[in-house]
Length: 342
Ligand code: FAD
Image 1 (cartoon, helix red, strand yellow):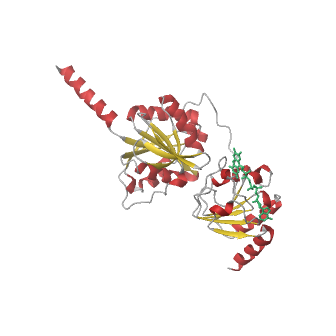
Image 2 (spheres, helix red, strand yellow):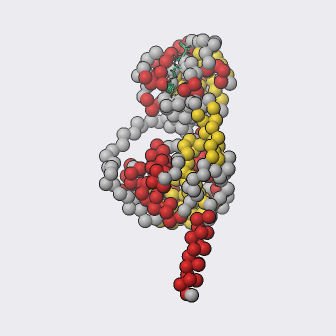
Image 3 (tube, protein in one colour):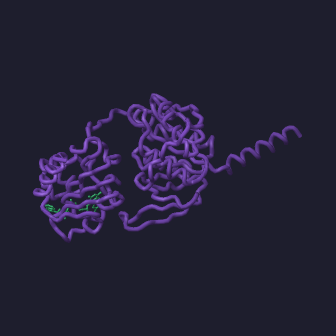
């Protein structure tokens, strides 16, 4: 009789925890324990599922500081923030993070696990999906309901609506498709909890990271991007773009088309497009870029697009809000001089 009561209680609580829909967001840390901007876009997507949200932060230190920052987003229904802090997470290798994440999932039975389309989440979440034997859903641009999502296909030329019947839906979201979550009022009620997180570093080892130091913002967070194409003709001429960007310190940076990258005019981490970065700044200035679909796939969500091209029939003008037909080698020095005077 006694054991039957326990069994019945256990069964009820197991069923309840399985049926209770909740979301886990993979929150990301950047230098100095700050919250990565992509996490704010991911939170907006997660909030659209309209269910309780837990967040998990992986890091080697300062996860508590990141959690306190996260707590300020009181409108997002964050109930709990899990801290997985361990010196062994150096480099945040997916091989060491995923088993810990799997453990967290086994204990909590989340119905949805979301991350941004960052290198970190794109490494960890498909690996987790494979271990849970579910289909990962990548680069989501809209949440329709708890099992249906949209994403771009054919280099952004068509939108696919997809439905998933998996018991756990593992999703990466395209940051530029969702507004960043805004801080609410009050101190936030989310509980902060440490999780047992011993990473397994047998499979791979973090050796070092080489980061290019720049005064200019990252492409993903820049408000203004001056992007150059094949027409720039040389690495030296790319300076024309840097001169323009430096007139907007902390706000503007330089991007490029693949043709410019392939020609060696700039570093390949500046490439924007289908096989480069996806950006959506307030202002995108395409300079000497023809507007191939693979390039457009990476910048078409920009708020205002300006095109400078000497060919009036160039396809870039079809998506530009403002177009200037002219030779960039004449236009850019003039523009820079005029902006300097302002
Ligand atoms: P071009 O197409 O050569 O255009 C140069 C433009 O400059 C022309 O419109 C010309 O009128 C103009 N011009 C020339 N001289 C001047 C001047 N003096 N002043 C003003 N205008 C001038 N591309 C990307 O950008 N990003 C990607 O991620 C990407 N991924 C790809 C993936 C695949 C699978 C494939 C097949 C291709 C991909 N591409 C990508 C390449 C893409 O198809 C184009 O080849 C590339 O974007 C062209 O770059 P561009 O516009 O700089 O060069």
